Length: 419
Image 1 (tube, rainbow, N blue to C red):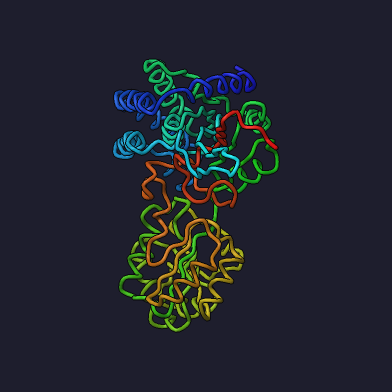
Image 2: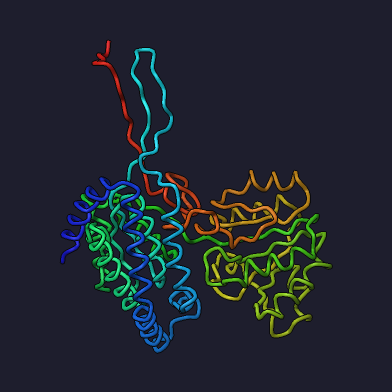
């Protein structure tokens, strides 16, 4: 099937999807959940075949982690479908109601976006997340995963389409581009006749390609250098496990911390403790300037001297930059210079410093005394996420159900005429 034909079918399916009621869409989600649960052995077998091929090709640890589906992860992904079904449906919600002096009543009503084009790399969980959010909001979607996860995604999409059909829904509401030829991505980016939004979930090169080539509106997200600033007033005992959680809990995630900035007042007391804590957990420390002088003889084999370019690296692994800054203003300046658009945190017991940081840092998710790993649709109570947007228009941060809708103006009169 050509991309043009996929787009046409997706658009037709989106019109049908928009006509279903919430209870119907929840019924479709339950059908998908049951179908995937019954297919767990088949899904895991396909995923293991993908992993075997990926290892043979020497794919890096971060990508392998994103590709991996064990039974616990898969059960969690399937359970999230039920969580999405249990969320309030934004479609049909009316807001900003008003009556004009001429008697005309205006209000906004939420409606589905239409057709989503989602391009992603080694993340088979995205296939399920996008499907559940798309079905819940009455949208259709065209998915394009990476070639390294082709077997996993093929099984997932086959099960999903069969489940939709069994529930009386159009199976073309979820389609998958299985050919790894990149030309199909280029064609999808030009399919503005049928596709209403492109959502790339991958590295910076994919984001830039979509921004540059697409004639369809693009949501940019999923990339950014994560920072934690340890203020002079921070509690050292509580800061250590929080930084460890932000780095170690899942280092391949886009919300894992990449750079820790320490206030100069704490440099001699806190940096050695932090370095020891992280080194004991197999984190490689990339120390800069004053931090390097403190650590270079302390932990041989665990610390290397950082270069300026390291501040612009999204590590996606057990590595982290450590640097000293003079004060809060210097920390904010560093964040602005080095890709702070995703998830960034301050550790502080000073309310004014917390407020200054919240106001000054221009990231999609700003944290005070909390791990950056919370930037996630499930953690935010959204059920799942279609992406984490780092741009400023339409949506920012984890995109859930509401972000997959737009609105129309409803105008009611009494055979009203404009004077």
